[in-house]
Length: 126
Image 1 (cartoon, one colour):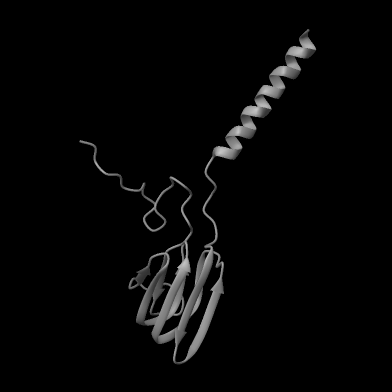
Image 2 (image 1 turned 120 degrees about the vertical axis):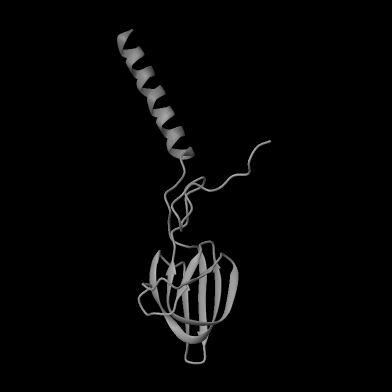
């Protein structure tokens, strides 16, 4: 009888752990899609880019963020200046000086905002 109880308890714990593993939000990950930079001096395409800093194509750049992550455009070549232009997922930015691009983590479902690391705002309840 004790062996059956132990097996039943172990099976119940494993079933609960599997259920939790499947319902917990996944950690932030790479952007899904394409990030396209085009200017007179160059063309660059990043497919499913990992979070991080990437080289830009210079002045008067057309940026197509066809990913599910926000990207930041920087005038310098190392994503370090305080001046940047955000481009939201599936949006376009034109005529920017793009020395580098930072791809941000996708926030986990129900997670914090990728830029500020603060919880996402919700509408006040009446």
